[in-house]
Length: 168
Image (cartoon, rainbow, N blue to C red):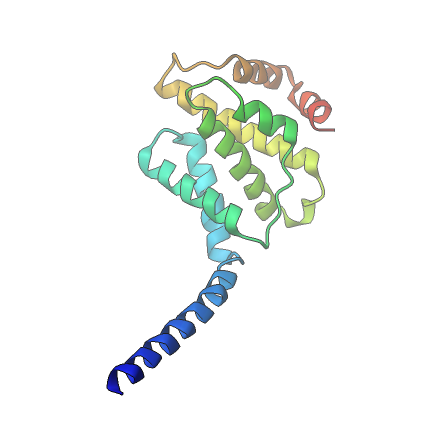
């Protein structure tokens, strides 16, 4: 009898725990103000230190949190995302992550411009180019033709037109 009671008690406890799991997960689907501030700070740190192990870990964590949060939607430009993600470049992951986080940071820092996708993409590409320049500072041999072309367009004042054509 005692064993049967303990068995039922365990079933009830486990059922209660299982019932709590979806509620905890749902609570984590919404980002907090502190998390959003951390994502923005991490994005800006990555612009100047994209190869720093500690900052990279923060970047990976931020990217996972952003992708898990259901209260923020970041409309990425498929063409840019594909270009960055498909580069045959040693640091393509860092560049792609920077594009995604910088797009998110723009939306957080500019809540009144959530529908201005041109401005968001421009800010994200500028952030990517900062990170690329920081990579080149540490590893001058780590060149990317695609990113060098974007830098050239930036110097010529043509990057905005190029992004608009690519993303519309």
